[in-house]
Image (cartoon, rainbow, N blue to C red; front, side, top):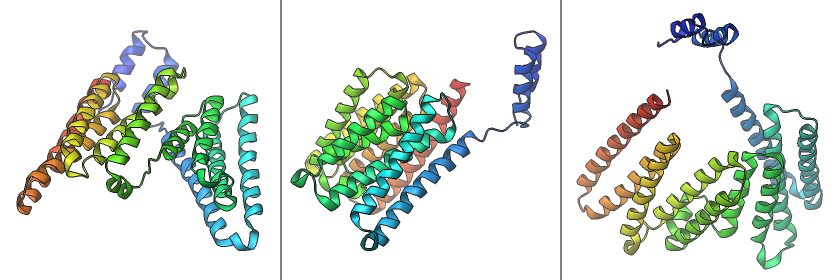
Length: 307
């Protein structure tokens, strides 16, 4: 195991760092202090997802007994209570790990409530899709008011749903060109939104969303024969841009996007050219191994550069 304890001691003795900072760093190197921040974030997120799932199960099982109006009112009150708690914590100048996820819970419950009300009472009539636009605006206002990247991601997802992008894989590979156009339009809107907005901490959310939407559009073009080569070329172009951006910004996720989406596009095109099933099988094995090796090499290089 690599330890930097000796280097920290030398820096402390040379006066480059103060003793309290050196003591903290040494404790980290000795594994006497272990951060559980990531684990706590995951557990908090899992708790929010369980609550939302439980609400969905409760609604589906007891709709006839409770009634749609009572269910909508109960979910709305619970959502407003979470919003009020988040607002109170913000006004008090306090912040805790759970606060971001309580705000996320409020936004998810609001989404569920608005969707449920529209499905039961049909307030928007034939333009029912506009409730996604309402959610996109609501979550965007909330995200900027509270500085929440989690809620901002919900706003972008609602915007994508309003334009017509569905996250189910089978829908993407059935829609073809239509899905691709909608994905590209959504990616362009997200990119413009990213350019005009002023919160720099939100930029990564927009970058990841725009990149994935653009890649989904390129992959959707692979469905039909007359657009397959174009889709492969666009996916490789996006992969090159994503890898360049990830290397420049030291964001490993964008390099991973380049490898994964680029490999999928090339595999589809090459398999279309090959007629023999044995050759296709051999190629896919080789391609998969090459992609895995490339990912590991990329990860090692970026870790080394970051160090």
